[in-house]
Image (cartoon, rainbow over all chains, first blue to last red; front, top):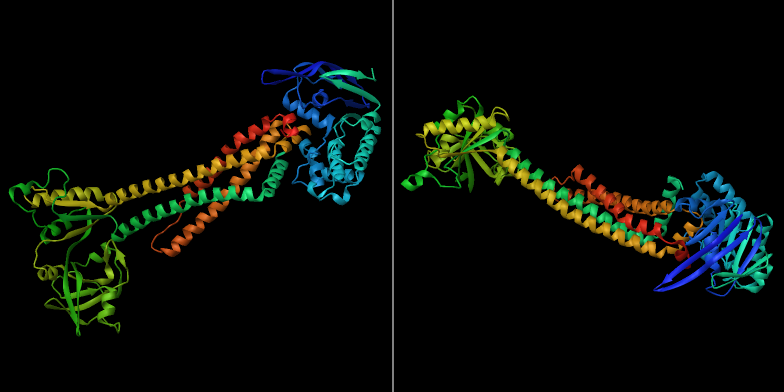
Length: 224
Length: 400
């Protein structure tokens, strides 16, 4: 369902050209559990951003669910992001002035779903993620693990086909990190494609397919 | 995202940044209030002047001796002539004109009023029975100078004078000495206060013939003419000028002014003044608009990662632009509404402090103030909103 062909992404810093992605070819099937590892600057986050349509490649072709999404307009890409992709970040990125429930509700608001249905869906998700007691707390009143649970709940409330996690345990201690990983894997078991970018060898090893990157190229892929 | 959610979400944002929003709203409100209060003052001053003129009488044409000319001067002056007197006989001719409803010749002077041991100098008006309706005066007691009573020694006292000389309130029918003659008090004027520099409470009015005798003059100070209608004012002016020119051997040695012309001039000047102060106040609104823009730009900078996140979870640029735009609308609406209220409160306080000044803010000024607040707020939000919408989500999320 994800098919990247000859994707190139070049950043310019002054007169220096940095090839963050240098002709990457990658196929990821629906329902896979993939980890992307590599040193800093290897291009793994850029790859994740391109897959999540946050970043546009300079060259190459990207097909998602059989449709070419490289040439979509900004608005169309936003819609694809909303419906098919969920992001989980290292630093959670919750809106500080909204409560946990309101943060989870955001994608439903963007989608234009009416308030009554929004409420019931948020309620259901709050139960699923054991956040019921924390529903009306702001992010600053939540622990790191709870914040990441809110972020994952938000990323998955519209039932995306792919969940993209960038260092999801980077800001968490070992135990809460393990809880978050368990949660992500549970979502994977329900059929969601899970792509995790990480430095953490232990986390990377848990995936079913392991991709290693260096200097903007895929140097290892045990799924091929 | 639909409109209702956009409005709700932006509203919660505005409310959650309490201090920042309060400051913007305050700046906006002060700007709007300034527009409302200053135009209220300007328009109040205009209404005050117009009111003062109207209290002089309606459809008034005033004839005064001498030629008021800014160029050339009075032609007779070079030959050592003084302008001809304006006489009672002149007034009688003017009264015959078809455009004239009625007129009151006027002499003014100062004389000693004396009764029961009390003595004081008072301003004395000599006139006829028509002065009362022409000048819109009202009587508190008794009657005014009777028609055709030029030769009967009657006097009408201002209310303050009546109170002073006859504290028991029974002025009518009493005798009082003015200068060397004795007069009988026929009436007392109602309290009216100051009007164009004349305090009608402190004057005494006697028949014109007595006044001319008292002041030893045959020349009138003024003739107050009331035209038949508003449309008759200009024809009346021309006819008066014509008839007096004929009577004065072809010399144009009287000045005829219409209250309308003076009034219109004052009206124009004060309207321009009101517009001027409104413009100055509007500048403060524009400054408030720039403040809104600055604060919104800071807000965009502060909320970069939040905007990046909204994009990551699928908000199109248009939604983000609309959200920030809606924030500006909320802030300007609040500023406009509070400013409107503050301005009207301010005008009310001015009216309480200075009851003579009808400081009512004109409707157009209130509307223009609020509209300017809205427009400047909205214009000021366009740049920050489009900057936010253009943010690269990758950079925004990385927090660099």
